Amino acid sequence: MSEIKSIKKNKKIHISYFIGSLGLGGTEKQLIKLLNSLDKKQFKIDLHLLDEKGDLFEELDNSIKVYLPKFKFKLKLKHLFNFIVNYYRVKKTKPDIIHCFLPFAYLMGGFIGLLNKNKNIIMSRRSLNNYQKKLKLFPVRKIENFLHKRVRLIITNAIAVKKNLIEEGASEKKIKVIFNGFVKPKPCPNETFSILKNKLGIKKNCFVFLVLANLIPYKNHKLVIEATERLINLTKKEFKIIFLGSGKSDYQKSLEELIKDKKIQKYFSFNDKTVHTHNFFKISNVGISSSFEEGLSNSLIEFISLGIPTIATKVGGNSEITNNKNGFLIESNNIDELINAMKNSMLNKKLLQKKAIRSKKDSKKFSLNKMISDHSTLYNKLITK
Image (cartoon, rainbow, N blue to C red; front, side, top):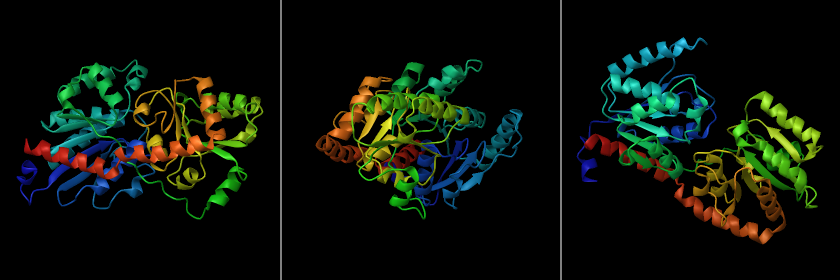
């Protein structure tokens, strides 16, 4: 604390943040809460958006200076032009710290920081490094390894992601784990629980499973569909699966066709992703994450913070949130384990109540105030060292 106090009272720490856009994602929600909540008497904040504003842009505090992309044409050449523009912006504004969120921003902001000889570049890795393997024609891993050696600090939101980084060759001394903080879901305006239930076709005493995940193949919605078909014959209890998330239309169409082929349409409801998720949580009994891969799932944090037990695959950072005391941790893509977890959720009311109580208790480590405080402390330490 003595180091922090040694900073001149009148000098704010100037931080420039880099991210692609403020779309409807977990990282974007966390970043907005961080920017809005940091003490403006201590920090001068600006945000460089590299692609577009995004749906969450309006939630950003007015005190934050935002730099929008100069060039918006569709050619990839725009990234080069925007790189040059942002380089000169940083050169002119001379921030004390450059903090990059997500891979694209890391590549852009990282090199902008190095070219400007900024000594306090931070990278926030929010997921496992599977994206590196998908970009076969672009040497992302080599470029990121180059940056890892030169940045001051790497922040992760999960122990699993930290292990990933160490395997890549990043120094363990540079890596700091700060868990995501729980961001309270927003209520849906002019829509009560009963209106939402009627819209989704949910009858009285119907058990509701909520899958809060974008419609992307690695989220493995198909496992839930396959499990549902078999589950119908194992229980007479009425239930509903809500898919809440947006994505590619062709993937959603393939899921809808699979459901139609199995003649189980009445058990499913597709809903586009929205900032207003409060009512969806309120009508749900259990949350499901059937992903093949995850960093630290914000949806799982939201579920347990609201006392909703979860069923989650044992991938990435999921086991840092869900366990067999507060929910059901299952092997990846294991349909039998998913069916058993869903069946036990519906048929064992006392067990589910115990898991709900434990969920609430376990959620305390995902404190939003702690997440903000930990970042604030790190920023101060960087400047005083």
